[in-house]
Image 1 (cartoon, rainbow, N blue to C red):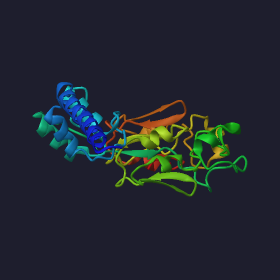
Image 2: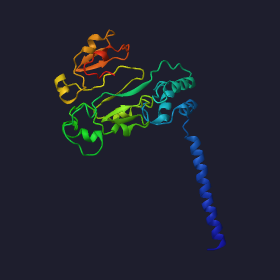
Image 3: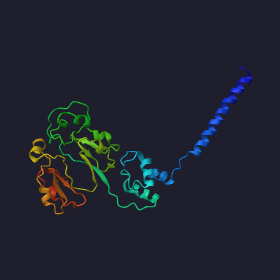
Image 4: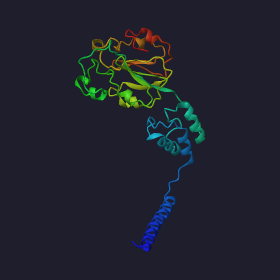
Length: 263
């Protein structure tokens, strides 16, 4: 190849590259999407876990929703009140009252207290075990199977299986809701951090059937409901429910419960 040919090829390649660069630069400015500076500021104060507990696709998604008015300043369950205050300051709004919520497992049926119908030797996963006969090997079809699907789902190492039942570390829990979505038995719910009395059972079977498979299950006797002076307890579908808004944490329900499953 002659020297002239080499120079010509270099000019063609260089000219093409220059044209593409100029074209992309102009196109980038012409079609650029303007980002509200508040969105970037909010993204900067959010924890950055991208856990999805807020209901949006990561922290940037929540920041965009807050700026658009589609989500509250307190929309991040991981950041809690401190982050909500910073977001409200950026938005120039009042954050309002926020409650520190944590996950709670509604089952006390440990290996010693709950019966097993058969030995399960499949994949260590609650969803898989739930597809087996009678909804898993546990005698109580409502109880925690202890295979740790919630443990695997938790991005904060806040839940562990202890003696066959999932237990939440309240101080490590960020209320992201990942464990709630992972539990096929729907045993986990969010409750106020300072709520001292909770019913650790999810069975809706009648008392006789409950006692046949678990020594600590709620039998729906309504003793807790009778002694509650704040009218915070109701027994529906054979299971006691405590309204945290009404509960005064007096402890009378826990004292009277014959199965001792009110924490």
